[in-house]
Amino acid sequence: MSTSNDIGSLCLETIDPMRDIRAGLVREVGSLATWSVSSCKSGFGVNQLRDDNIETYWQSCGQLPHLVNIQFRRKTIVSDIYIYVNHRLDESYTPNIISIRAGTNFNDLQEVELVELLEPYSWIRIKIKDIHNLSLKTHLLQIAVLKNHQNGNNCHIRLIKIHSPISTKDFLLGNFSTVEMRQYTTIK
Image 1 (spheres, rainbow, N blue to C red):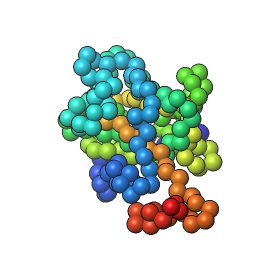
Image 2: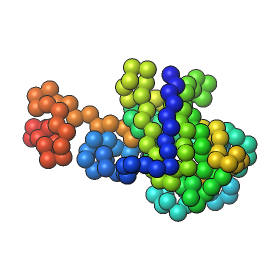
Image 3: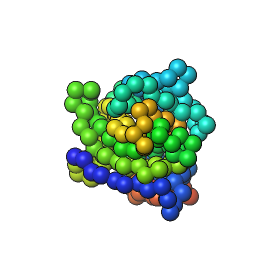
């Protein structure tokens, strides 16, 4: 199931990938995965995608599409992908069209989101849903850069974060949404 989103250069809200983590609603699960890229310039690889430094970046090297593969050991629920890109610094290296694909292996990947980025310069949030409009459960995520701004060949992606929802359902006490009330979700 593919949908299309346009994410413009003028964001009305500041996107903070840590907000929902601090609130206890999601956790970052990228560290549970094995990461690989289709190509990279020496010194600008997977480590730069995960180093929490917006000054470093992955730089692809070769022909489009450029791929980031995120493989989990077991099926993992994914609700959001956050990508940090900066058109102001990277210009033609900035991704313009990104396809998010999911599956159990490389042979059965299906596109779940198609996103057009219009000169982005900060965090981009891509909500991931299955055909039933629920968070997606997958073994493999692939982020495919299909086109760059100004028809550039290689791309820069500065950071990627993968979020999974935290289940707080407790059949006795209910589902609390505030941090203050989450302390009561278990009986001690």
